[in-house]
Image 1 (cartoon, helix red, strand yellow):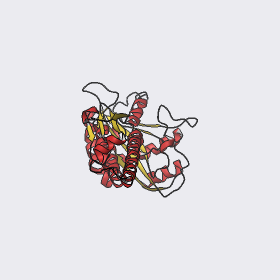
Image 2 (cartoon, rainbow, N blue to C red):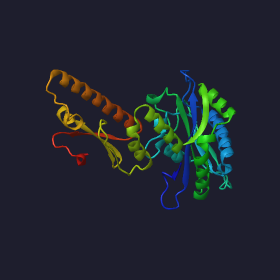
Image 3 (cartoon, rainbow, N blue to C red):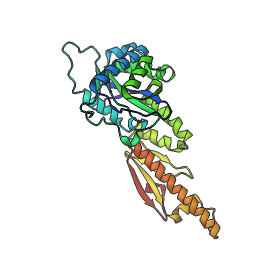
Image 4 (spheres, rainbow, N blue to C red):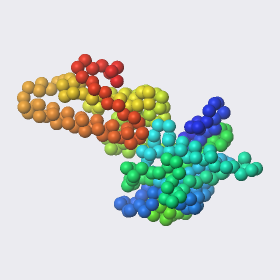
Length: 305
């Protein structure tokens, strides 16, 4: 993906290509390290730079910024791309050698005394997943970044396998078992997550989440029975909380509720609905989308959200 620099201002703002080295792990093998020391992070970043130049030669003239750490997809797929933005802001402080204005730099952040700089520490709440991501950003002149971005967007998903030595280096450095290692743009990653969420029964939520990611100032509804009612606008997701009576009126108006058996059945459906509501709120929260619950009773109208 190419995007305006999160820290730049004005029409001349440089662009970025945002992506990641995706490590698909083997089975339940243990992961020894979530972050690398500076020297190891630098060694891995050089291999990443070489691999990317193999897909688009012009990447060698761009700045590559990465970190010796791996993250869950939800830590990258957040409105405003905060993890990539943190890399950008830290890299902006890195000195450029005199006379090297036209040369691309490779900037890799690693841990010092087991601490990563800034807000780069992976969250332990999302550790243990089968797909781990080492983020990177490419930056430089708008024209060059646009050209490289177009090439990577059109090629990585189909032929973006990492070099064998890159996969082995990541495996040894992090102390994990790699099944596959490949490069993805954040658009590729979003498309992959959309499929995974669909398979997990969360497909109805994806258009709203995609709006939050790609058009954070936009608006989107999840308004499809029997799903909870969610309205994304102004950078937050507002989720309707229905009392049992209000839920009955919206979700089960055909049920007479005139026998004990019917009431028990409706009560189980309502409990399932509440569990689904909590699941959706948790997924949105994991992606960094603020969630507000709104009580909707009586003469509720969609505009109340």
